[in-house]
Image (tube, rainbow, N blue to C red):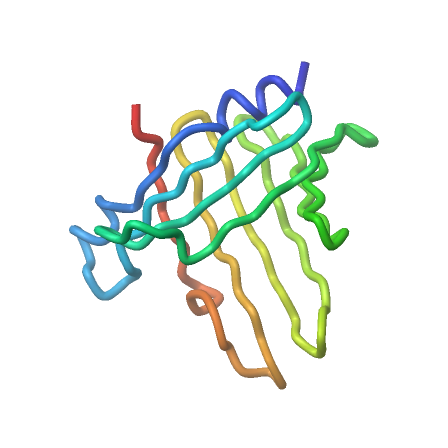
Amino acid sequence: MLMDLFCEWFVGSFNNRQQTYDDPRSARYVMARHERTAENELYCSYYYNRSKFPYREMQFKMNYLDGDIHLTDLSGKKLIFVKDGSSFISNTEYRHNDKLYVFEAVLGKNRYRVNDRCYSEGELVRGLDSESWFEFKKVV
């Protein structure tokens, strides 16, 4: 089943250590943890290197709808992943409190490329520029 494959790839620990070693100015060193807390629930936390507490936490309800994986947070905002060949792809935009949120991701078996941005009045206030990505590798 598609949700099982998505969870097999999405759940676990990731980091972008290789990216930061190869190009220290490209992005901060981040560790991500994606946990399945119930049959259709996920908890995601993101930590800067050597930090004890996450800088970002998210809880999602996970549903399979029209052939896609929908992750819906507690406020009702959705991230939609579509299976495309050997990856799950997300291209999601939404507005909230006069800000534009853009989430782009490519999830593979052992990698997770993410560009998660927030704009206010057209200016980038969080995330990497639109041409850059966090390049996470799954930690086994």
